[in-house]
Amino acid sequence: MAKDCIGTAHAQILKDVFGYDEFRANQDDIITHTIAGKSGFVLMPTGGGKSLCYQIPAMAMDGCCIVISPLIALMQDQVLQLKELNVKAETLNSATPAEDRRRIIAQLYDGSLDLLYVSPERLLGDGFLDILDNCPINLFAIDEAHCVSQWGHDFRPEYAQLGTLATRYPNIPRLALTATADERTRKDILRVLNINEDSSFISGFDRPNIKYFVTPKNNPKKELEQFISTYHARDSGIIYCLSRKKVEQTAEWLKEQGYNALPYHAGMADGARADVQERFLKEEQIIIVATIAFGMGINKPDVRFVAHLDLPANIESYYQETGRAGRDGLPATAWMTYGMQDVALRGTMIESSNASGDQKFVEKQKLSALLGYCETLRCRRQILLNYFGDDIAPCGNCDICENPPESFDGTLAAQKALSAIYRTGQRFGVAHTVNILIGKESEQTKRFGHDKLNVWGKGKEHGQKEWQSIFRQLHALGLISVDMDNYSALKLTAEGAAFIKEKQEIALRVEKSRKAIRSEEAASMIERMLTNENDQQIFDALRSKRAELAKAQNVPPYVIFHDKTLIHMAKVKPQTPSDLSLIPGIGASKLGRYGDAFLDVIAGVA
Ligand code: ADP
Ligand code: ZN
Image (cartoon, rainbow, N blue to C red; front, top):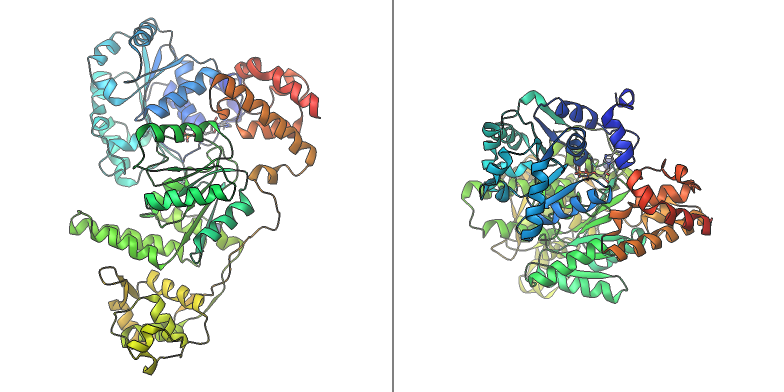
């Protein structure tokens, strides 16, 4: 489908401006649909290439496209990248100086702008629409369109008012774009923005370049260090923790280990947070340890890993947070370590929140779905995508697929575990219950006389870690619950009680160490992709050149070229400008601006 369009005007823009040869997935159809003047809805995963779906129509048609976006940082980032491509793009927001504002509005009137990025407040406030009434507008692109819906996770009341565009400008198409929208949210977006159901372009949710990896929490710092040093020692990444204190301690500890790590949390002053964000964009090989407050509106394409040291709230947030890795399509990892304590903590957070009873019920169900993901015997990507309604075959790119767990007949172990909980009055936590099963004396076992129990030492066939894993799995299966108000005491659920009576059979996973899956010792993803030493050297030199140019212009390095483009250059070693123009990501503007500088580097090293 894409092929026979090469040669059409919009394929020409793809090549000349962006430097790409082919459209991805739905891009071509969406662009054709939009240029035909029809409104549409685009659901595409992060990194899928949504921006081109409105940027190319904006350039192909007369007049200006108004892009509505919720965050100033996102708008600025997009405009910066477009200007590098010689595209006439601007943004108007609360930070725009009056003088620039006047100039931009003049350009809007005379039709010399291709794209104008504005916040919904700016669009709907201050008589701005009266100005637009008299300007040549070719398209309204509504980015992060899930903000329209109350059901979306990021509802913004101003977005809900964007419906007015449909009535005020019935002849100007609206293109709504988002990476996250379940069925209800999707319907809301179509209704509010008055878009036809059959103008929906839906791509799957899959992010095939992200590897999912979950490991039981025994010694989290050590596990984290091992993960980073094995896979990502020289990469950029984000590490999420729940508390500010843990954020600071973890960042400090990583620094001591020699990493370029910075903390980020809501308790820091605005200026300090802005600095961290700026450094994250502009530096390479940098790690941010953050509460979930970090990440919204960050478009850094080369985040190579996202690590969770604490359990996220649910699968939606997990998918969104891990989705910040690998926007450039190169391999990336989503890694998490989790233990029973996390479950208790999350449960307490739900219980003690101000939410209604119904809402708490929903939250708890969502937490259970996440536990199911953690303790699965199936491909992790299958579980994630199933949650969003997609079916796929086992992915081959998660820890389960690469190293399938063995299962054992867990009937007897489950019986013993449940009966130990029952016999001790459902008042004790995992550690104590495990001690009883393996017959390990402690002050507490003696004090309560638990060494006299029938189950004392009856579980010696499994070690301590194995029992911990068994308890986690029983929890994920809904046979036991953790009573957060009561020292994380284990309790039998109704299903657990029935299980003891009915003696059902059950398969459990054998706990084995999930250390390094790969044997290669490469410390970064890029090194793994450039196996040849000479290519690696060229890449390093190209990267230094990029850093130098980025610094001189005070822009993030990826604004100049993405890693993907540098990798291609290092492998292909172009010698002339026309060789260089064949490398993906190099259009006319970048060829003119940077071509010679990078050709010199290649000639110097090769
Ligand atoms: P999204 O907004 O969906 O997260 P972007 O529009 O930022 O994704 O695109 C992600 C990356 O993919 C960008 O680096 C973009 O230049 C690149 N990209 C988009 N379309 C294509 C294409 N047809 N061929 C190659 N790269 C593309
Ligand atoms: Zn898999």
